[in-house]
Length: 294
Image (tube, rainbow, N blue to C red; front, side):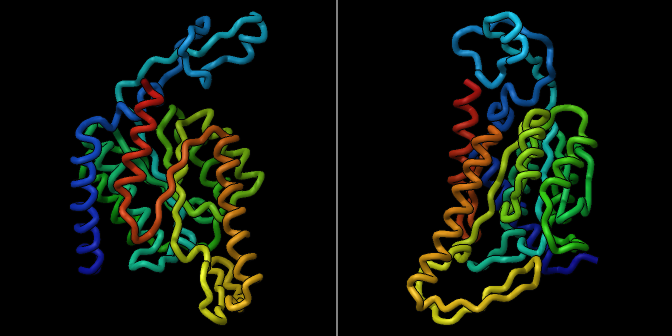
């Protein structure tokens, strides 16, 4: 039985997401993915203004002139939500943890998709696939996904993005819109390669979850840093300026490395932070997508 507190939380997120859907998208959800949810139809010679990402490099090399792949727009989109539910998703310092932030974002996307007549599915992962719910239409289904994100208790505590992407590529045969929602703290070379492969098959978008306390920027004395996934604890003296600077530098370096990976894999990225409104970053993201489509 679902606790009353969780039902209340689901209802609050539903109301908040519905308002965001009505104000931001107003039926334009599909336009942000124009030319993305497509089926391959053939090739033709490149025309100025074509998206360079559609260039067929093998044919181009063989014909000694640029050719692009052409697609037929599918009648409906399939949206997949890949949610990191590892132990680190329980972290949050501003009255909201990363799992709750993910739920709010996913509710907005799911309600937008079903209001456009599209189907949406869910894949929750740690270092393995914890739960998979196939894509389906309807508001009831969208709210079920929201409940699962908030209520589900994973078996494992660690993260392995490679496994989730590999599973997606095996079970979703046709091209889909894949939102990968995680803090991406455990990216490695293997995961990077799979992200690149996945983006060739699906329109893949990385949603990076942040928290203001991910980086300690001021002197708060002696602090015990606890790794939620491994259980390891490290005592850090933040009154030491060199230590404080090193902590900040390491985190910023990780963020820059993530940006490099997403650029290399040609994957769109959106940054979200706990305790902050998701409206502005979502609005900016969808505007960029619509502009790219035009």
